[in-house]
Length: 347
Image (cartoon, rainbow, N blue to C red):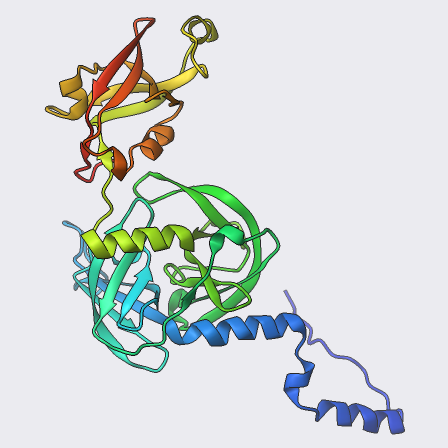
C-alpha cells in the first residue's frame, strides 16, 4: 500500500500572509483548546507519581526463558502515600522474586510486596523513600459516561505514555485472572496496551479514579479499570493484613437451571441455582451436612442464582458467623446451618 504525504497548497495573499505568519509566532499555549488543557492538567498532576514496575520471576518448572535465566516482566504503578506505598495490579507482581520501581525522575528502588489480592487484581508494594509526590485519590462513585479520563503507564516499555478518552460505561463485570468476577468495573476508550497494567486512570482535575487493569484484544479501545473506591478498601486491608480475608464453605459449585414447575412449587425466587459438585473434607459445608448434587438457591434468604452470587455473599463479615443455606435435594427444599471459615486461598 502506498502512502502519499499530506500537504496543502498555499498561495500568497499579501497582507493576509503576514498576518498568518504572525499568528504562527504566537505563544503556543494560547493555541491549546480546552480539551488539551484538561489532559495536560491531569498529566502534570499525576505523572510524577507514576512508576515503571519491573519484576523478576522464577521460570515455571519445565519452562525456559529465551536467555535461560529468570523470566522478566513489567507493568505500571503509582505512589499514593508520600512514604512510598504504591498501587499496582496483582497480576503484575504476584509471585515475583524481585520487584523494582523506577520513577520519572530516574530514581530506581527495590520494592517489597505488602500484599496482593488476585480476586480484585490489586496489589500494594512499598519502596524505601520519603517525601515522594503522591497522587490525589478521587471519587469513582461520581463518574458519568462521557467524562474525560486520562491513562498513564508504560506500554511495551515506552515509559510514561499518556492516552486520553472518555468513560464508555460504568458497572461492568470482568473476570479476574483466577476466575472470580469483579463488579463495578469502569470501561473506557483511553487506549491501553500490555505494560499499562497497574497504572492510574485520572479525571480532568488530576485525581486518580481508577487502576487500569485490562483490555480486550483484538478489539480497539475496549479497556477497563478498577474503581478507586474498590482500590481504597482493598489497599487498606492489604496494608493491615497483607491479604483480603473472605469467607469459605469448602464446596465446588456450578450454575444449573431448575425446571420452572419445580421452582414454582418450592416458591423459589428464580428457576436456577448452584449445584454442589465437590466438597472439601472437614470443610464447613462437609460438617454442616451439605451433599454433592445439592442445589444451593439461597444464603440467609438472599437468592443465589450463580456461583458469582455466592462469592459476593461470602465476604469477610461472614467468617465465623452462622449462615443458613437453602438447598434443593431430590425436589425437596431444606435449610442447613453452616459456619464459614476464612478462605485458605481457594475460589
